[in-house]
Each structure stands twice: as C-alpha cells, then as structure tokens.
Image (cartoon, rainbow, N blue to C red; front, side, top):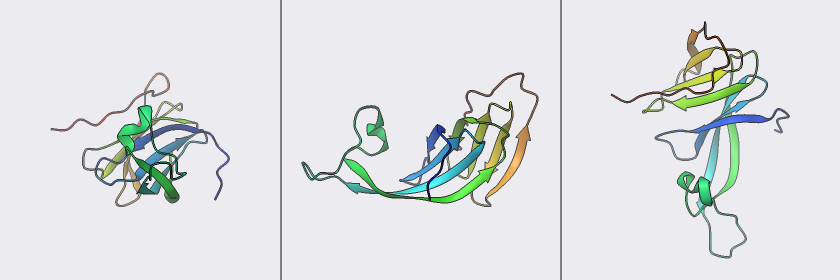
Length: 127
C-alpha cells in the first residue's frame, strides 16, 4: 500500500538483514522487511552507494513489505533506535515523548514523558 505521510527517520535492525523501522510525520512507526538481492554489474538494478553502502554494498531492494505499524506519538517521529539484540525499539517524537516498544510482542512497554522539547535522538547502549 502507498503511504501518504513523509518519512522522518529510519533505523536498521541490528541482527536481521533487510528489516528497517521507519518513522513518519503522522506519528506512526512501521517495520518493513526488504528482500535484498545482489546486484549484477550493469544489470539494470541500482545498488546502494555512498552513505547507504553500510546497508548492503552491492545489494538492491527488490520488494519491501510493511509488516507492523505502531501508533504511539501525537506528531512526527524524529528518532529511532533498536536495542543491540533487536527485541526493543525506542522512538522519540516532536510530541516530546519517548516510547519503548517490544518488537516481538508488538506492543509499547514504556512512555517516557516530561522532556521540554522534541526528542531528536534516542540510543540504546550495550553492556
């Protein structure tokens, strides 16, 4: 399906190749799976290049599918980060909240409120 809201941020799953969390201006977060295939030289498929090389050098996206939609922000999602094992996702928004999601149970675990302004970065730290 087509989504009419602009993408505001994106994070790559740390352990599952081709899985991405994407934040949107409507306050939603969607998890996408992308089928990555090796690009053939001069085969007509575009490869990831430059800054996107870390997301699969020599790979191109054939298909992408939205597998989960999470609703927890009142305005644009501005920051995303997966925990090191990928089981948790933190989202920060212009609504000044941080939401910690359980990506396995597909539900919100915590809402951290009280920030004075929009949340512009979130980060999990490994032990």
